[in-house]
Image (cartoon, rainbow, N blue to C red; front, side, top):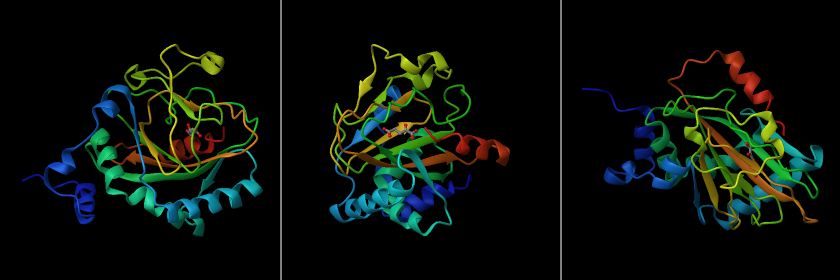
Length: 231
Ligand SMILES: O=C(O)CCC(=O)C(=O)O
């Protein structure tokens, strides 16, 4: 009999059983992202707000990676152990996966939008998905403060957005607005990017990136990819 993937045992240990484990999201499968409301508690939000403020005092713009050895990493725990999230991540990979990176991302007032990008260095052939990201709203995401945009279905294009798409706004792109405590789970191969923050107040978010672990990538490739996440 085939052994159960380790991650399935871990999700069961968090209290998820039976059919619930099989529950994915048709939107995540077809469009490459899904918005889940009210996943974080107020107490966790308070912790994450303080974390974002501490880190953005030293690194004022963009992404700040929290390394696994960093004591701040513990503030992400509710994000990467939420059964509801792990079920969605599982539904993308249907294989073992691990937490790959935790990041604070503050879109400071006036900070330019990100280019459309995927969260992996190269394009993959569907459905050989390699990464899944989760973007946690630490503040409300609005039409004006830098909410994230997505190109629905682009995870199936099998290509990366070209650098020429930096200032391109595809007609079908969707800007996801939501409330603090919500999360967006995305197939990491979906074209997406933070938008310009036109307000006078920082828009805070944290991300947890998961990676399928049955892909054999040389470590230096992974470091290279991680080093490039500074926009
Ligand atoms: O901050 C955002 O809205 C998006 C962040 C993002 O796309 C990323 O870090 O890859």
